[in-house]
Length: 440
Picture (cartoon, helix red, strand yellow):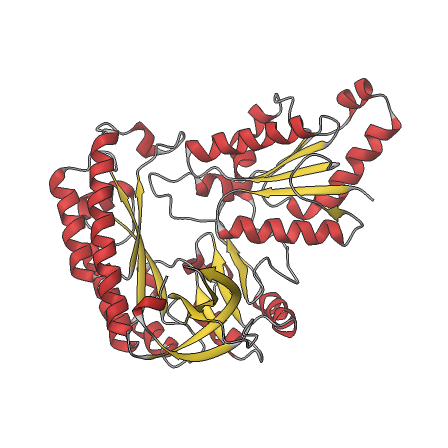
């Protein structure tokens, strides 16, 4: 029995795919072991969203080869898709598998070991195929991967979509993931049914550009229809959405979604900037005013929805005035949480070639100010929920400040800790009166 070790880099989609690859190999006789010395195969699911992600991917590949020079080191995923030709020259990498070919992992490994075992090492180096890439920008196929369990025991992330057609000026992902491709709804439903039967209570629908789900299938309201179908699955008590674009939240979407009690009132809306001039340079497809109206629409239909977002500070040519527009916008909207990123250059993107790159010290100061505002907004939102009855899906027992607690999340994704009373709460949904001291 060959031993395989995995290391995942990047987003929730990558995490899903890593778990799917692990279960695929286990079903074919491989034993999963920790990512340390002793494995026969090391699989690194790489990320390429920033230059730093590229570097981390290279570091993990070289670390794997050092742990066992005789092992097969397999580079998989987005960094492979972006840098496949360069990786062919990297002596630390034995196999290169791009996106949309991960489903062939078992066959690729068996061919590799068969050739390595049958011929001398020198001959094998000349004979064997080591690079498995396709032109990701010219495929309409959704790669069929699935899971029967996930690392989390109560919540399962489900990949339903791949690819992106947006071409934001700072982003490499459309070039590494290709055009939008949706998973067939019946396959999504069947996978979730199996997870529900295994005891999972919550599913998170995720994708590279979740808002485009169904668009390639010429399905109107594709994402909303998928949510409604998942809502009918027995055993699933909560449905949560990954990041979505504001334009998908139409009046009809908000109205119909608000009638689904299993849908969590937690919406992560991609903002990136509150300045329309910056948004235009980013090639985002909405204005700050449109996003504000989306937030107001959600607040009309849902009771105190948790609205979260992402913001990039220090985008090329971002003036002080443009930053202040973003600051004022965040003060106005009062998101529950704002994830703040300092702009990081990514080779191969239009933003990397823009004039007016912002100094790191300016990015740092702008980030600091937004982090302070985020804490203020977050605290105010938690205050608005204190004293209210909330349902908590409990996940695990932990120690917090010297006391044993059960930890879980509310429908609005507030993480709370309640004292252990001796009852096993794992996987249970319980009603609690929210106290601010319980919120992590």
